[in-house]
Image (cartoon, rainbow, N blue to C red):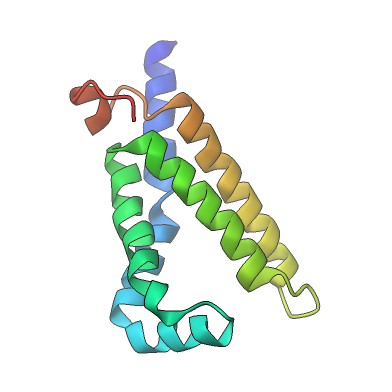
Length: 130
């Protein structure tokens, strides 16, 4: 049963960060436009490199199971913040669904932060529990 659990955690770790890796790459390739959008939403544009680091770099870290617990916790908080900052206006289009989507994603990252990356991860190879 433990092997099945570890495979399940691996599959979850592969699926969870896809959105973040793709979004981070999009911010890299569309830097100026993303910076303008952030500023229009009241978020300082100078924070974009941190967002890219978290989305793209953090997404890769989760994917490979490196610094998993810490990265998952930070990503959960980030995802909740973006729900409020970018999807809080429910009168506008699909924002209520995007808001709830962010809450669901944050819940998954919190579980990963609590229970760790599973056996098939860099953290386990390094024998670290961060």
